[in-house]
Length: 421
Ligand code: LLP
Image (cartoon, rainbow, N blue to C red; front, side, top):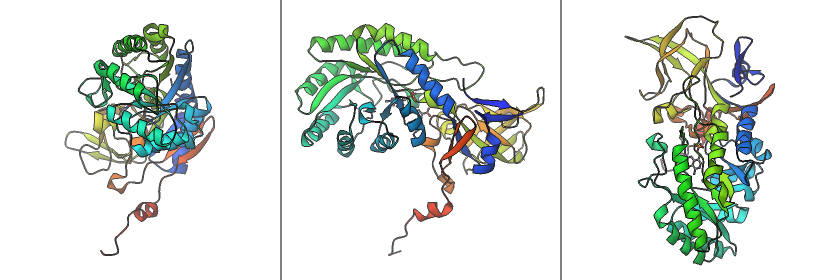
């Protein structure tokens, strides 16, 4: 459920007509609903309510500081994967003890930043990282709390580019090798083992792969405890999928996911951490765009819109489907026709949809790409020198620009011509 609905014949974000925002901000722009973000976060809170837990928002999915403040103020923790994301979480007022640091390639500088600024735990992904973290912590006279990310060799049954839990993926330490690495961690100065971490992939629409992975983590918890390690936290990652089409998809609900977690690891008495991104932010955002031209091709009509693959790369990168709707509500029973929906960028990959049935649209009409809150704005670029797409946050009947569109002067001034040229 989200808060982008037709009212009085026009698509609203909560109580604000998207056309009103378009008139003020220009197109394209991302628009997020505070009520939807809040609701989705709370669904996870409720799902885990029977266990000690922390819901850490995967800020890679939507990292605007205003959004992080909204979720942080509700009590959310944050899952960060870079020094930049760590800074964003802190700028949003989230205390270090609610921030977990994931990622396969943390640098010593990033370790230092988080150790000095405060951190709940590092999710360590390799032996060299573990040793470096020990050195950095000792040099700062502090102790780094860690979980080791294990790779359970489970097929997440999702798009190959976003599956992370198979042995062939770069992520985590093979679960079979974990006892040896925990033994080393226990011997290293400046390291305190607090738990186990696992994340098998994104946009999972079936609970079975999660359950298989979490069962392996439960077995590992028992084995590690028998070896004397104080495993008190389990970080179970993110990855729960969302419906991208309104009709035929029904991924498991957070409540079912929570019940499965309780069933597989609840008996261990650990504090549960999860790192959902997409389920919180995905359906809390739309990308609004305007039709530039309707172009008649040989055998099809192209809807050329002012958003492009640089603003929303998911269709060209993952063949992802995003529902597209007209901002002006089509009267019931009005005709539709198939369009190829494309952006202005000079490559054929700049295609959002082929043969998509839409109401009849004309130059100047507004459309919205639904389910664009996660991995939309954060993956945008300025390819073709198209200004980075702005972001707007709506709450009830008011809205604010939470990242402005850069001016062309700002863009050009970032380039420097060397004096010797
Ligand atoms: N935790 C870790 C360690 C992750 O790597 C990820 C996502 C998450 C949590 C959050 O997963 P989520 O709940 O959002 O599924 N750009 C791709 C998705 C990449 C996901 C990367 N890792 C897309 O647009 O589909």
